[in-house]
Image 1 (cartoon, rainbow, N blue to C red):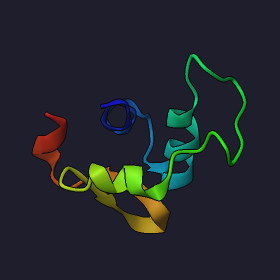
Image 2 (image 1 turned 90 degrees about the vertical axis):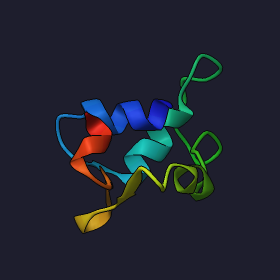
Image 3 (image 1 turned 90 degrees about the horizontal axis):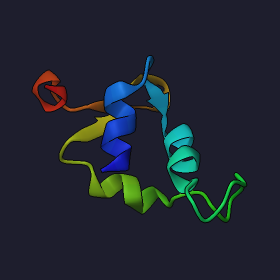
Length: 67
């Protein structure tokens, strides 16, 4: 759910690594590194609603998803 919120409310299209590192932050940690980064498989769970766009950005598959 957090990934979808990030994509919906971002001011610009986010890169996949930005979502992986950003969503990996939470109450349990405030450090960004490869140990806290979400796996690529986590993004794939959202694939019916999101897809890879130009320049490795993550976008919604259709404008109605955001609505």
